[in-house]
Image (cartoon, rainbow, N blue to C red):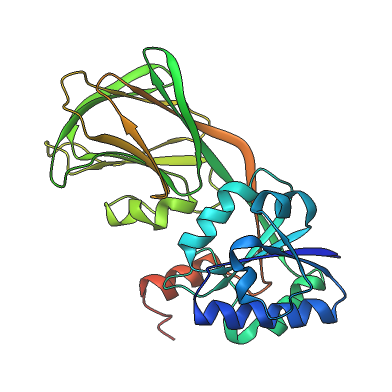
Length: 291
């Protein structure tokens, strides 16, 4: 893949990120790439001659974006970069690293493989969340992992109705509901008892949070479905919907949350030795082969 212009993004004020970013600058300079630096990491870069840009400008101008940090930082960048036709790869400087494939100790080798065209591109879909109040749009935001309807108070129930493609599914009293993509199925949804969905599935998982019934279970639906959550007018205040735990929108009783697949795609690039099941075994502590 002949990448000519590369954007660097990372978690500021982190020693490991600092080291990896400057190692990337060295490798990319040797490859005669044009390098753009996301403005929040300007102080981390030793080479002060490099152009500093916003995240949107990186998405518009670059062929490849390299995100240095954990999955949380990758998610923040991904919601913006998914709007642009740009390849994205991550260097893992976090804990789990489901979305950040490159090891900090192996940057030179794995970067060489990607530039030699041996990377594997995988398109992950993104969700669009719209909040309506009395039929009027209040806000619209993107989510890569999940959209969560919840109460602001811990262990405090709320009432809502679920509709799929405008068909009533159920009403529920619970702490809320998680609507997760395959990408997010190994994140908050997994902690809530949801299933793991392979990344290429066109599906969503809906996971109730501490429902006040024994019969409520996670369900998997077509990702092209329109999910509508109608918040009961009987609720008190202090309700929220969050996108990837980063964007938080305050709700009022009677609001509607509509969740659809966004037309944008996050184009993740994996090294050639990437294997999804190996990631699961490593990150989740699954057993290895018997022989």
